[in-house]
Length: 346
Image 1 (cartoon, rainbow, N blue to C red):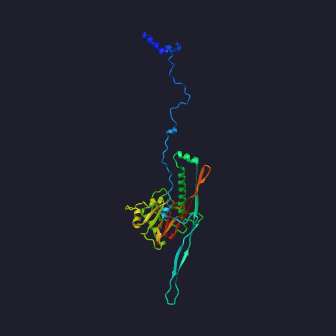
Image 2 (cartoon, rainbow, N blue to C red; image 1 turned 180 degrees about the vertical axis):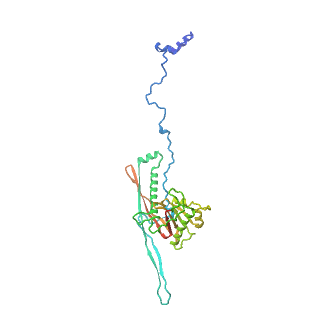
Image 3 (cartoon, helix red, strand yellow; image 1 turned 90 degrees about the horizontal axis):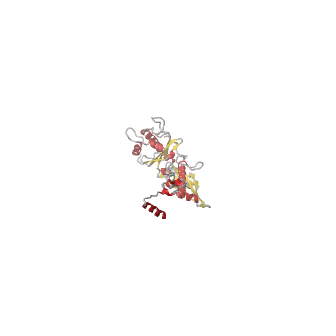
């Protein structure tokens, strides 16, 4: 404060004092000095924030889609027995008899019943999910319900195997599928096509058969079905045509009159359903099957299980958990193999 009063008295007499006048003479005119320069930093120079604070995690989970399960959609699905059931017997009754000429004292002619008991074996399968306390907590940081996702994975895995058995059964057992039941009739061969070969589509999926050629193959299938059932199957009956996704493209072919295969099928077979299963694309070629949905008032067949998914008890470990899940399958139960015709190589 005294310095300021002294400076004010000097200015009254016209004497102006500069700031450098208070400096030692050797520093008064040294302009390299920077009295307001920043001191040297102790920390690392930085003008940002941690990068993770600028990152965003989308809360919507993107799921990897797998091939669809379509076996149960073809003929339907039923539960036979339970997981303790190992063998299923199916009663098959055949009515027999013969006649003879009538006579008051004749006792010829007889009617009888023949019973058979074909059987199928069930197959039990399992999968296990495991999760730990720390694993769950860390997944929770990313807003993931880890236990629920494991449950979904188990259900998907078991359903995928179940669908496989519906198509191909289980090797080494009396357990067969829609495509390999030994009682099915031999597969027909498609007719030769004008473009060459027998296929409806090329390996790349391009149609090579005309609409009339594809429809002719379907007529061959239906004729075989009529022959096998001695005419019991009619064009107006509920029918199921099963094709692979690739062969489905062949059904989109249109003839020179602008009429497609679908149009021809729906017009002449009004109760026909078309089902698609990727498992009908086999190593031997694309398979096409034509099923009569019912025969003699009973379902031609169905897919069957004895245990869809049984949740066993959760096993508590020191800092983790484990749980087993069990399922059982009979494959496909085809009651009337004569009510289906098939063709391979389309």
